[in-house]
Length: 506
Ligand SMILES: Cc1cc2nc3c(=O)[nH]c(=O)nc-3n(C[C@H](O)[C@H](O)[C@H](O)COP(=O)(O)OP(=O)(O)OC[C@H]3O[C@@H](n4cnc5c(N)ncnc54)[C@H](O)[C@@H]3O)c2cc1C
Ligand code: SF4
Image 1 (cartoon, rainbow, N blue to C red):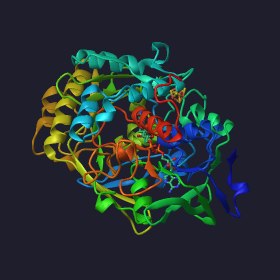
Image 2: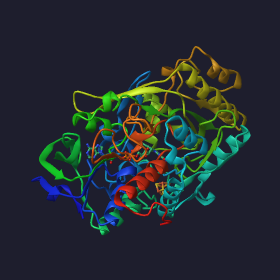
Image 3: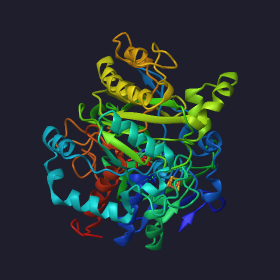
Image 4: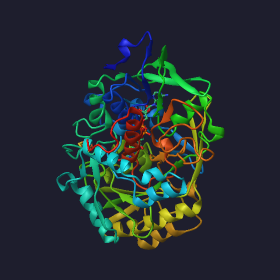
């Protein structure tokens, strides 16, 4: 059953066999397995459940309501960069582009070898990926929903010498509305609230929305439950208290919130909880073409390519609500007004890169995560040299100008000579406009207790009854979009706890 605010205003106290904090990519998959195994399963989610009618095209309003910190959360460190995540039933899978890639073999080998996670080489993880891809209907984006934007992205990447392919996505009947970042009113996206949670509820899971966990209840080193507050759907007012007592506690609150909950509960793993933090770095080229593109038509992210020169660097098509794109591209007020006629000719190609970065996650005075990320200039120069390939290609194929948001280069690059400025080593990493939506590694998985927070099964070292199942456990960046790996790891590790067949095909 899914419990909503109306029935929770007095708070609650329940006992369960397993309690899961967070209903996103990791938590929903885990809850589904525990319920299927017949365990009394409680899933707690900070945000409300939303439906098609809430999935408005008013991007800023949607973000204000359904993203953590209204979508305005910033990383500190090298730059003040946005990092976004969903505060709704289904977590960030509800507001993401549904791209699904397994971990590349070279990253998987790196995790296994460098971090002593040999078990990740085994068939259990392959079987988990298969189950996840099947359940989410993952398949390459069909050309019928490309729209002009994805077609043009393919032409531009081809011209740059980048061999790409339609992106594999977790969708069923995508209509190419380009609305993925504000949900999917069509009902096509197979976010976990659609692909997993109905099954969990059918198998008896009790799902509590608007339920923010404050801390894990510890009896010495043993986790015995959690406590928190019921909040209003906007997350501002605390309305009542709740307690769940359970001998198994799974934390799936995401890279930024999981270390906050652990630290508040006195679980620090010798300072390693939140002592690390990683993210893919990014940049983008916004070409204004000499013809209409209508970028809002077509699958949000339907086409992409891996770099043939830089391992771990990826090019993707993208569109987001115009008001959000405009805020970054054209500014606000009169500046934005002047840009408006260019929108229908715009084409955006972001780059995402598995750079060597460092970071950490602490707790702000208001209780929210305080994430800091440090990006070496050299790593950002790698991104900018690859970005120049896209900019040149856009100009060759008829872009009137290209905007990159990089301080120190012309705001409207009109010639390849001007594009050379992207290669200047005067550019600092902090000069680059980027968004970090692929975050990981705040509670790293390692084969060694003195190097990580959790072991290969997601169990927190030095504790009993406590596991982590979300992106916080990645030992290093995935190099590809992370959700499939978060789901596969959660699937494998929750099945192990629930004693379900690890090699099952469905
Ligand atoms: C705009 C955007 C687009 C993206 N596109 C893609 C993509 O196409 N493909 C891809 O692979 N990845 C994509 N990602 C990244 C991907 O969505 C995340 O990596 C993934 O969802 C993380 O899974 P998770 O389980 O770690 O956390 P989440 O999915 O974020 O789930 C965490 C859940 O925990 C809840 N929670 C947090 N704190 C508490 C608390 N104290 N009490 C109760 N509940 C709590 C949150 O509200 C949330 O529901 C995108 C991300 C964004 C923001
Ligand atoms: S592009 Fe539109 S229809 Fe397709 S999954 Fe995204 S929001 Fe849904």
